[in-house]
Amino acid sequence: MTDEIKVGEVFTISDETDVEHEVEVLATITLQDTDYVAVTFVDNLEEDDAEDAIDIFFLKVDEEGDFEAIESDEEFDKVSAAFDEVLDEEEVEE
Image (cartoon, helix red, strand yellow):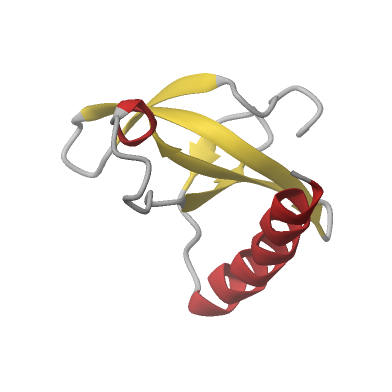
């Protein structure tokens, strides 16, 4: 599934209050046949001050390719650790 979602793509998602936000995909991974994306708000990336840290969110990709929240702390911890490795490797390569 992550083959269909590319790093750098921008999507519009709705939060729990149905407010829409644009997010950009920073990384994708597959763990145990489940696809996940790391995203951040586009507004965060467009800010001029590069010293500010950006907020990164991890979302699960369902069978239809839609994003959904990660429900359990255990699953979140597993996904977070995997993305930390991926994002750290990308920083080293740059």
